[in-house]
Length: 286
Image (cartoon, rainbow, N blue to C red; front, side, top):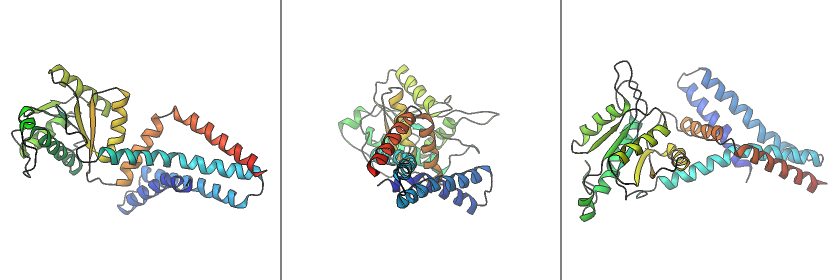
């Protein structure tokens, strides 16, 4: 039970580094991921070896501690995957007064495949809320749709510099090219996920649009977005959509590392638990 979570982090690191090597990317990030994967995979292997050797109570306790220590990031990843599944289910936010789509970098001023998937997910959700059919002809009908025909689509993302448009402006161009009738609201100042959420919420409230609001992002990014929403107590319902990414391992690895870095309050608690269980293993082995 503990061994499987213990190999999740090294597995992601090694898969990410191997994928980058296969694409000819032999940079510092690739080397760091490869070394990190080899180092972290050694922890559960050594732990299992010590338990198998079982030369004495201290060795048993040390092996138990190493296995639990290696399993901690894996348990966090399993929680993130469970939340991702919950937020990606159809119909998770069909009742809302606005749909927010989180932006992402547009280095060439064009919407990439992942951002296009987010925008398409936003349009699909908007169609289900307003009753207006999307370009595939789907969408709800009836009185509820008529009442909600003015639900706006908020496009959030800044970083417009040196004559380049902000993310939100590029997103607007894509959306209007797909459906010119969509009511679009631009938020073009945000440079982080938190700013995306807070500034979009503030803008909707200033327009007199009552919550709750839905926020659409990539499925792998949905758990951390939901965490941010809870942190700032925002009236947002997160919806994750499947989106093509350059490296699935890299995307999930990035999310896991960010969560581990920012959830610092949990590390002392986990360390105390690991130490306590290791001491119990020592006592039980006597």
